Length: 137
Image 1 (cartoon, helix red, strand yellow):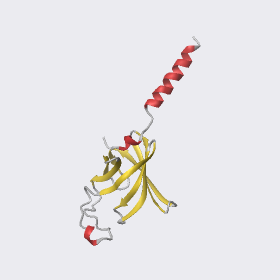
Image 2 (tube, rainbow, N blue to C red):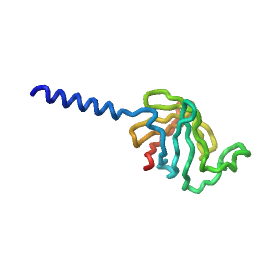
Image 3 (cartoon, rainbow, N blue to C red):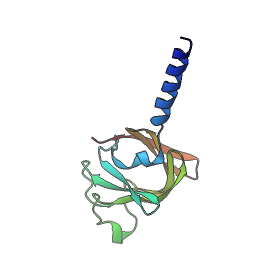
């Protein structure tokens, strides 16, 4: 019966491997805890894109954008990440648009679990802000 613990350990190892997170686990709709908006991460070409699909904080248009021709763009449907590339088993990197200040930053999306991702925006790779999103059910 010495093989029973070994088999149990092997089963646990296989179960853990089956639940390993992948970059593709990012696809879906996620809740931003800071402003309660919903962001959809979706496949675009061979990369990842993101757009706002629900907004509840009152900002109706992209009024913080420094480009006057873009200030009237609606927030719902606004693409905030385009063509991000896979940079690891559970990570994407690309340019991230911040509607709060109308600026673009170097951004990464890291899948933490099936129900949690972290979105980070950085200036000069030194000053970064990370927000943990949860999957919308």
